[in-house]
Image (cartoon, rainbow, N blue to C red):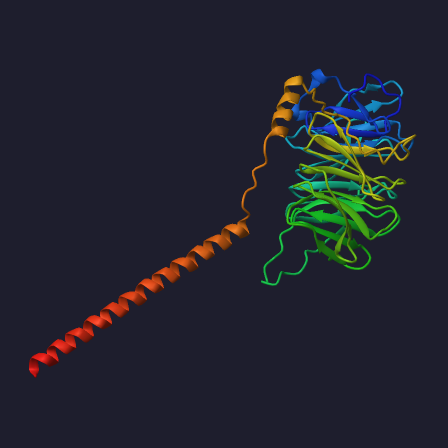
Length: 400
């Protein structure tokens, strides 16, 4: 349900049409923060992050490389800034000491200061993921299609700090294709999780080796969303292109929890940092809120295909166990419908034969036919034998 004005917004989502939406989870209400007249598919929101640790202003990155800031105090947007002039798609934008760090699909990672490029990195072509280390803000991860995971220090632009190595060949001795779609740093450690378009989830230890130390598969479809579980460093939340959402224990190599109720590809998922809640959104136009304690679900219909997600670290007065949908479809039953129900209720119930009875009856009929044919064949044999005997007697009488 859209609301004209909400004081508290717990969740922010971006849509494929370029609209930023704010949601109050406890009231199950939402509003469009953008003007609906500015709808444009080229402005699809692909990245959302906080401008500062106070979580007041939201940094919005669009596919056409424009960046804007939404100010919660005034409920207004800053002037948009275009990052780059080349024809490319923005994969992500983050903030480092108040300056923008952007990444496009062609692999150019740039640090911007006052609208000018301060430093630039070429991370390789077909980049699909761009992620910032939450503890060391100058460290970034990139990866893509036939583009292995790389860890960069934006202040040292010559060579990556770490370059992953592909896993060994499969059981047919064929090379395993590379397609990194998501990456997440484990805070305060040298570990990083990745998900691939070939339904694999991997964990790398930067101090141990270049190949993944843990590797597992989930389902049979590309994984498009990944999030860490704050209470267990061996568990991750993944979502794929067919709407399957699950918590995986990568050390045990199996799903721990599987959630239902999603009907389309999942574009973003995030585990709440303090609450036992998993929030996801995607192409089915719903914001899904799943509880990891009792698997209860809350769905909020937002009218647009969703592409990005951002959570506040604290939700005031939120009721996680609310299972009611925001949009409740009600049907008014007329008197004619009641009459039809009475007519149907007064009709006699015709009992039909079950399949087993039909099979038994058919078998009995076959047996009767076999007996009849057997009796007929027996009578025919008796008649033929008697005729043969008479013919023999006649022949012997003539010879005598």
